[in-house]
Length: 111
Image (cartoon, rainbow, N blue to C red; front, side, top):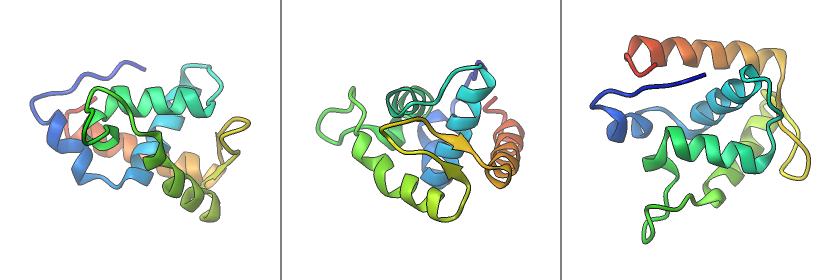
């Protein structure tokens, strides 16, 4: 899935909770027929939403620690399964939520 952002890219990631951004990124990776490993997820999140995932001191690098708690919350809420040592997958409820997030992104003309 190719995403093009308008002028709002820097502000956009701050408006949507990181858990929603992660769900969207997992969904995006799976739609591209790829397995969602932790490394692939970090790349996708940082590519699409760099302002949300960057290191404060080194903004050209992703801070993967910012994904840790949100991923645990998503597992606890039964929206995803998997862990950083394996792959992540969406549950049926997680897929439904990811599709809702995708609609929000499209309405914001960010897709």
